[in-house]
Length: 190
Image (cartoon, rainbow, N blue to C red; front, side, top):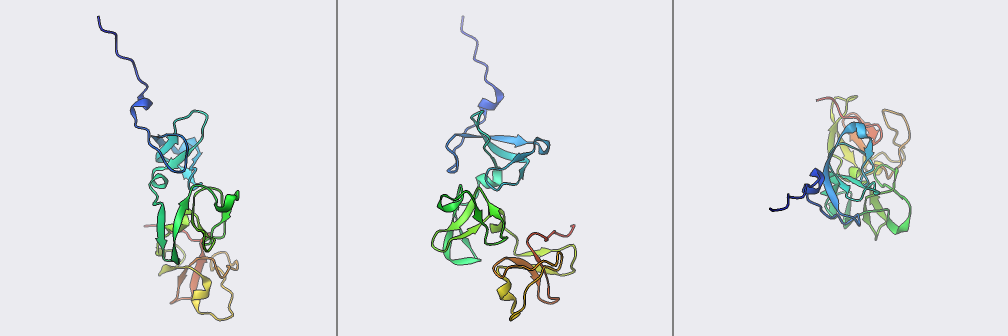
């Protein structure tokens, strides 16, 4: 009589994959919002299609979209050199400062070693224009407040009234001289 087939856990039927950012194999999973898991790539809340480490002692999770990020990026904000996707902050630092929003990050970064230019993965893929709930016209993404042609003027966000660094990105309407920093931009309801 033949031996009965071995039972496999359902999770073992899902294929394991590798990602350059992690030393262990990853497995596709569906994450529920109430699980309160943070993506190890973009550091944002994770729900839906994702990958997690197959090792039970490892807390590594990636959004499916973070798993699929391109390793190299040509970005209009930094046309001189390509940006490389790093799995951790550059230069063995424990964090980096994003050149778009000014916030620090501790995980994935698009990086130019020549210029020491860094972007969060979320900032690297911001839309070029956005409709803002507090304004009637679409706002265009500007990669510096220096580009606003306001000699000697200091740019202040029209939402929070805070001064914005000359190197920070903003969304701006030239027709109305209305702009927001990246922290205050909230898309208009569809």
